[in-house]
Each structure stands twice: as structure tokens, then as C-alpha cells.
Image (tube, rainbow, N blue to C red; front, side, top):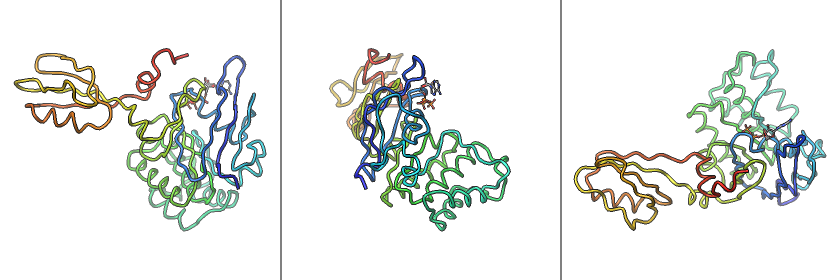
Amino acid sequence: MSQYALRAAGLTKRYGRLTALDDLTLDVPAGEVFGFLGPNGAGKSTTIRLLLGLARPTAGQAWIFGTEAADVVRAHRMLAYVPADVALWPQLTGAEILHLQAQTGPGTDLAYRDELVERFALDPSKPARTYSTGNRQKVALIAAFATRAPLLVLDEPTSGLDPLMEREFRAAVGQARDHGQTVFLSSHQLAEVEAVCDRVGILRTGRLVEVATIDRLRGLHRSEVTVVYRGAAPGLSAVPGVETVEATGESRLRFTLTGSPAPALRALAAADVTALTVREPSLEEIFLDFYGTGAVR
Ligand SMILES: Nc1ncnc2c1ncn2[C@@H]1O[C@H](COP(=O)(O)OP(=O)(O)OP(=O)(O)O)[C@@H](O)[C@H]1O
């Protein structure tokens, strides 16, 4: 079997004049948890549809463990997929659907599946028509995580989950990694990708603009810090990671912080700080930060 779980070479998809995916070349080694990050409409789902053979590329090719993605019967023996919008058979219960999927998929660890049903707090006795978006997502996630498929393809899998369930999701991704499974996870949530992924590809208007490890991504991460103080202003000039310090009112200032917060915290500790807020940048801000407005097409 190929050492790459997933490969794309010049993968392109056009819908009329719109280029949804533009010349994607990407290798994901087996065993990696790879995050595919991008704002709405960046082309994440299009990429996944091409990888799954659900759509035909306008140009280029993709492979799943060395098998052409277009060879759906062989490629799908090696993967489990959770779509962004999970549709289930409305008249079947959660348990019946999990049973059905275990019969048709690449093999299921039934004991682990039961454990996941507990952990995700799913009531499998109810018909799927009564399930909320989050519960439908749970059924699909449980079915996928309980397989021993070497590749899990998850398209924005936590959009309907609450924070407790997100924690379970992250733990399940960790266990998949421990089993040696490869995870390809599309997301527009920076925090989720940071928490679970080894490497991240950043997609923007159909183009892969960066592939970076999480450490490198953290380096790009610029937070905005607001400080209210009494007496003398904290001395922040020449503090590593601190930039663009500006007074925003009487005894109030704002600065941006990149990398480790320790030097800035030491500088702030020397002043009489009465309030401190830290705002994480949005993904879009990080894009703009890193690529400049010139990168926007
Ligand atoms: N079948 C289609 N016909 C025409 N345009 C399409 C089709 N599918 C996707 N697109 C367009 O391709 C672009 C990429 O869409 P895609 O769904 O891949 O983005 P995404 O990154 O998955 O976004 P989201 O996070 O909103 O799901 C968008 O501009 C979208 O409108």
C-alpha cells in the first residue's frame, strides 16, 4: 500500500466560469492528521467530493493509498467519510443505521462503536427523523470512527456539536491517530484544527496558499491584547512578540501579540494592570495578516 494516504496532482474543478478548485497538489502521508482549513466557499467540499469520486475533476488526478480516486469501488474500501450535511434514512433508528453502516463499510469495531455511542451521548433507539443536526452528525461520526478504515475523511464534522461533544470528537481523532489511521479533516475553525492536526493546508478561493505544521501556524497567530492599568503605563517597547502598541484611552492600551505570551506577561506584571482582554484573530484576519490584501482574488 502507498505510503501516502492521499495524493492530489494538479487537481482542478471548474463550474462554468467559476474555478472552485485550482491546481491542487498535495500529499498526505499515511498516519497523519491533516487539517484542510478555509473560509466558506474556499473549495474544501469540492476537494473532498473529488477525492471521493463524487465529482469528476476538470483537470488533474487524485489517489487514495495509490488507488485512483475515480476507482470508487477500490478506493472506498480504504476510507470512511462524514459529509458536512449528514442525511440519514428518516424511518430508521440510530441503532439500525449504525448496524446498516457496519454491514456496508470497510469493517467496524463493534465494541468501540458502543463505547462511542456512550461517549457521544447518542440515544440510538430514536428514529433518525427526530434527530437534530448535531445528532445526525454524531451518528455519522460514530459510524466512521468505529471503522478500521485507514483513511477518515471528515467534512466540517463538528459544526453541529456542542463544546462537550467537540471534546469527545477531539479525543476520537487522537484515538484514530493512535490506531495509525489517517484523518483528513476540513474545517473553518482554527481552534479545532490547532487542537487535533499535525499539519494544515490553507485553502483560499480554490487555491492552496500554505501547507504548514501547527507550530508554524501558531507563529502566524496574532492576538489582540487590551490592557487597562493604574498609574504608569506598562513598558512594552522591545518586548518580544509585542507590536503596534497604541493608547486607546486614558490608562488603556492595545497591542498585538505573536508567539509566546510569556515576555508580555512579565512586562505587564510589573505594572498595576486592572483589566486584561485577549482577542484571538479570526481565520480571515490570519489570512490577511499573512498574505496581505494582495492575496485576495
Ligand atoms: N455544483 C456546483 N455548481 C456550481 N458552483 C459550485 C458547485 N459546488 C460548489 N460550487 C462553488 O464552488 C466554490 C467552492 O465551494 P465549496 O462548497 O467547495 O466550498 P467550501 O470551502 O466547502 O465552503 P463551506 O465551508 O461553505 O462548505 C463556491 O464558490 C461554490 O459556490
